[in-house]
Structures are given as structure tokens and as C-alpha cells.
Amino acid sequence: MYKLAGNIRGILLLLPFVIRLFLADAVLSFLLPFSYFFPTGVYDLSSNVAAAVWLHIQSIFTRSNAANITFSGIPLPAHESAIVVANHVSWTDFYMIQALAIKAGMLGRCRWFAKSQLKTVPFLGWGLWAMGMPLVTRDWTHDSQEMDRVFRGIRKYNWPTWLISYSEATRYTPEKYAETLAWCKTHGRPFPQHTLYPRTRGFITTVQQLRGTPHVKAVYDLTIAYAEKRPSSNGKWAFLAAPDMWQSLSEPGLSARWKFHVHVERYPLKILPETEEGLKRWLEDRWIEKGERLEQLRQGLLAGRAW
Image (tube, rainbow, N blue to C red; front, side, top):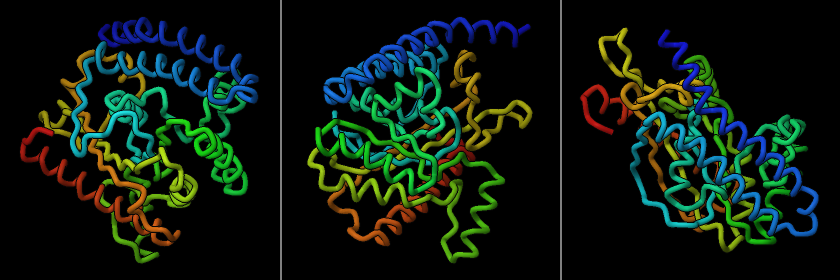
């Protein structure tokens, strides 16, 4: 009975969002032909439409379902364009990133690396393309052309943006972590903790393409963490256990069961290495630090310290 009530509650919360999403996709699809003639105007309008949609789903998570996100690290400047990289734990990671974007006044300017297959989805795919989302396939011959399309608008028109990617390219799981450790051992790389090893090619290209763009100032390195209090383990916290998509949308009082945390570090683009090899090592070093930070959060849980 409780599960049924939760599902009904989730449907009632989600239905207005789905209607808004459909209307937003229709508007973005209508704007698409005009992007050839008024690129900046369409980009700005698309950003406003996106901000309304993303704020709605964020409100379901943080207000309707009482998810309390905690923050640590460097306060971010308002309205600053940046390259954003983060570890990938769960579908709910985007809530953590959006919470920071709201604080920085950049929610509508978020542009996420997304799968190219979404381009064929009516309304949604067209809207993503109109917004300037990078739609990638992991085939570098194709992706380099797609990224050139995205970078062109940022460079030529000085579009404000958060260009966001999960550098591991897939979600963390124990099975994938075991594969990461085996790869690191074979290739003589240091073992990361609680993360997969980052894929560096997209990051290197992004930095090289945007380094000389005056308004893109920094790289934001985000560390995302969760913990779940499980009754089956006598109330102990399970580290990096996050709610699934439906739980995040339907379950009230989320922070009674889960912890949500995001740590942010800001690095000016001008201090990053110039060479491809240097950028590769730089990102790998950030991931080793990220793992150490996650381990500190895990140890804090064991010691009963608040995040």
C-alpha cells in the first residue's frame, strides 16, 4: 500500500513536469530553423526555456522530496563560463551539478555532453541540438566534427556556458571499478579510489579549443558523493549508494535516508598545461585527488562526522 501511494505521488509530481518538458521541446523545435539566422537570439531563448524545465525538476528533488544537498570547496563566481568535469555515480548526479549552477546563476547555460542517439528522438533530440548540446558517439572521427560545431558558437559569439562532462564516460559500479584496477595495473597507472579512470581525449580537445576564448575562465572539478542509511545494516551508511531515478522523483523526505554532497575546485584555464600529455596527466591527477577526497568522506561517515 505504501509503495502504491508513493507511485501515485510520483506520478502527480511528474505529470506537470512532463507537460512542461513536452511544451519546451516543441518551442525548441520551432526555434531550430531560426538558429541559422539568429544564432545568439535562439541560444539565449533556448537557455531560458531550458532553465525553466531544469528548475522544475530540481524543485521536485529538493523541495517536494526534501533532498538536502551539502557543499564544500571553492565558492564559484557568478555567471562565469567554465568547463565542468565530474565523477559519475548515478542518474541523480545532474541534481548535484544543477544545484551549483543555480547558485552561480548558470542553470540555463548548462550544456551537457549527451549521446548522439538522442538526436533522432522527436522534439527532445531537435531541442538538444538547437540548444548547442554536444551529441557524441565515442567515434572520434564523428565526435571531433560535432565538438567543432559546439565550440564554434562559444568562440565566435561568446556564448556563456557550462560545458559539462562525466570524464569516466560511464557510471561507477563495483564491476567497472574492478576493470579499472586491472587496467591501471597493466598500464602502470596509480589506482584511483571510488572512481573509474578518466577518459582524457574529450577533455584535452575542450581545453585546447576554448583556452583562448576570453569569457571561458576556468575548469570546475566536481566530486559527487552519496550515502544511504540502510535498516538492513543496523542504520549504517552505505557509501556511494544513491536513489534511483524514480525514488528521486517520488519518495518524500529523501535526506532522512540519503546524504547528498558535492565538492568543487576551480582551476583557471591559464594555469593548465599546454601539451596534450600535460593535460592528460593533469586530469588523471585530479581523479586521484578526487578518490582521496571520497575516501575522506567515507571515513567521515564511519566516524559519524557530518558532511
